[in-house]
Image (cartoon, rainbow, N blue to C red; front, side, top):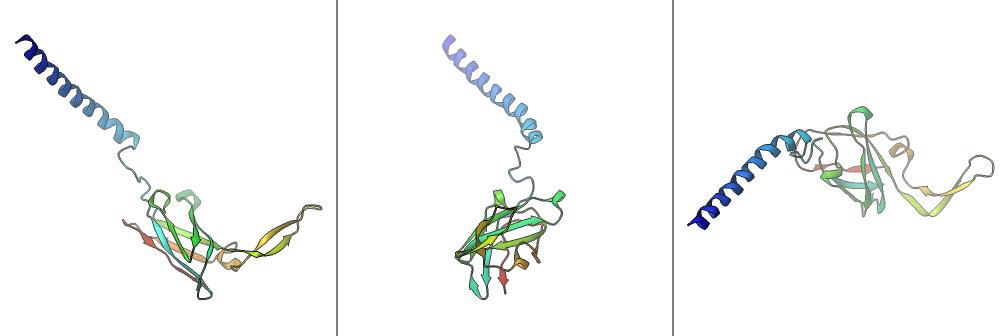
Length: 154
C-alpha cells in the first residue's frame, strides 16, 4: 500500500514538474524569438533566366535590396536556365536590384591592374546592364508561399 501511494505521488510530481517547465519556458521561447522560424517573412524564390531566347546554361543571380538598411541580399546558381532560393535564404518583402552573370569559360580577357598585376578572367557573356550596371528590378510582395521571378534578357 505504501508503494502504491509512492507511485501515485511520483506520477503526480512528474506531471506537476512538466507543467511548471512548460509554463516557465513558454514566455522565454517567445521572448527569445524561438517561436517564430521566419521572423523576416522570407519567401522562397525561383524562376527561369533566358538570354537571347535561350536558357542560361550556368551562371549566378543575385538579389540586393534597393534600401540596404531595410533588407537582405540573397542569390543562387543558375543551372539549365533555372534557379531556386529556399525560404531560409529567401527574400523578405521589398524592392530588389537583380544582377545576373554567366562567365564564358572558353574566352578569357585580361584586366589591367597596377603595374605588374595583370589578371586574366573568364569573359562575361551577359551585358553589363544586367549585372554590374543592372537595370533589373523586382518587387517581392508581402505574402506566403514561393515567389516566381523570371528574366528574359535580350
